[in-house]
Length: 116
Image: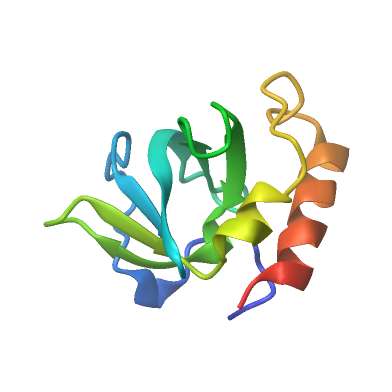
């Protein structure tokens, strides 16, 4: 994978402009939830995943660089992370995730060191 954790890799099958809201998200060891919202802004692409009851309604911010494959036909996104890696990620902060480069740096560093 490239060093840009905030960008979709060309091999994922993601097409810019595709609405991923509602897609199911699969970790390497099982389903983790569904996409609540997403962005495909250059160098700031991400998924916000609603984990539902899996980790008690927590939302997680997944940088686009963690995405391995987007299966548009099945409406599924496969990420290069385990459930535990996602569960132990920095808390999603809806107030900080837009416009706070320090927060994105913290999240990015976590996933840079934990992705497969």
